[in-house]
Amino acid sequence: MVQALLVAALGWFQSSSNPLGWWLVREPIMAGFWVGLIYGKPVEGIIIGAAINVAFLGWNSTGGANPSDLYSAGLLGTAVAIQGSISTEQSVVIAIALGVIGNYAWILFMSLNSFIPSLQDKCAENGNIKKLMFLQAVPSQFVVILVRAVPAFLAAYYGPPIIESLLASIPAWGVAGFNAVGKVLPALGIAMLLKYMGRKDLLVFFGIGFAISSFTGMNNLVFAAILGAAMGYIYISLQHNVPTAQISSSHKAESMKSSNNLYEGEDEI
Amino acid sequence: MINQTHKSGISKWDLEFAILRWWIMSHLSYNYQRMQAGGFASMMAPLLKKLYPNNPEAVKEGLKRHMMFFNTEPRWGSVIHGIVIALEEQKALGKDIDEAAIVDLKSSLMGPLAGIGDTISGGLYKPCILGICLGWSAAGSIMGPIVFAIAMLGYDILITHLAIRKGYKMGTTAVTAILEGGMFKKVTTFFSIMGLFVLGIMVCKFITIDISWTPVIGDKAVAVKDLFDKIVPKALPLIVTIASWRALMHGIKVVYVLLALFIFALIGGALGVIS
Image 1 (cartoon, rainbow over the protein chains, first blue to last red):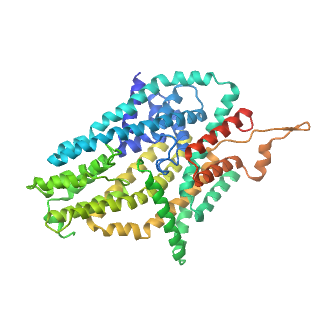
Image 2: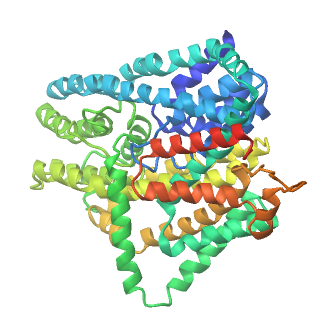
């Protein structure tokens, strides 16, 4: 009970819509750690959170078209998975399913908050600064508690037995299929990011990364980041020395295009 | 602009508190009706009171001006806030600045800056940091969450702070510096290369699906996986990724790609062809 309440508190804080909530609890990599800490299994929590996060790599960059909600996937996915004997692959599938429901919480949050600016207009007319700022900060917190913290409590408290009995009723071939789904889904996160980063003239670097890792088995990501940064640096400094009129104009058009795509989704942070 | 600032009531600390207010409050009541308008008004409100200590009517007009629809990327986009503070200051000092000009400036800059900010923050910087930290996390190390939190919070504070201060000091020229200067292009190219390279490695590390099909030909079981591994190891993860990416590039909705992957893996896994 106490643990489920703590998960609910995390559910409030991660969705309170400020940088502390975003970077300390929202991302699955963080939520997994906190949930793990609550249930006394921080290492498992970190591992599950990381697995979920891979499937959400492209989140935030697709502009409103996210099929699953990052907030609830990370928090509730880990909270449900860590209480039972659920494999990491299966917890990714559960997290994405929970995230689909979580999308509605986001819509509800944005819709219920839409009453607030009308009240703030009145404060502007009266020059009531304190009340305007109060309205900015406080009422929405109750909305968050309603649409995020309460569902988080219910999922953390009642979810695990339901999910476990569901999993127990699935035959062996179904479990095999389910595990395969969990192993494939990270591809979606990577593909979404690839759509975003994949400038044609730079795609070769994706190929180099894949070839190095698949043939040598090298998969240390810190080493990869250092190598990648070095290649990026070399590439930029070499570009200085060539006449870049053509390159820069085509790139400008491209970046304008992606900017427009992005801006369509105004409900992203 | 810089020389005249000391004449108004805005001190260095007033500006610092304004930055802090925006940083914390920008999205607190994020909504469909006005997006970040309340956040902008909350940032401006105490400043307006400082600028017009004896003129409550001007404060009210200013508040109404900043309760209008506003939405941008909260870090890079906040260069707008710096410019607006500088303009409001000049207006309060008696310069002939039309209030429509201030409103126009906000709405014309919020789109382009949102594009730039989202590209750098959400599309490049965060994935690169995640790329590094997920490796630690997948191994169960606490370094993952710790480094991620520090890197993201630090970035968030630093960029917001710099953008507002720069906008305040340089006025509209700050935007030209960001939009036209070569910096944006260099930053995106650098992070794209680093991100793409790491992404290639993540395909192998995180997509753990493989072919488990071993058909019996004659009286010998053939492991198809071994045949593939001789040409390109980890071919299946690469194929799945590229297929999903191409589908997305052709404008197929993410939900349908998700469903397709789901069905493909469920059936393949159930038949024992992949695992």
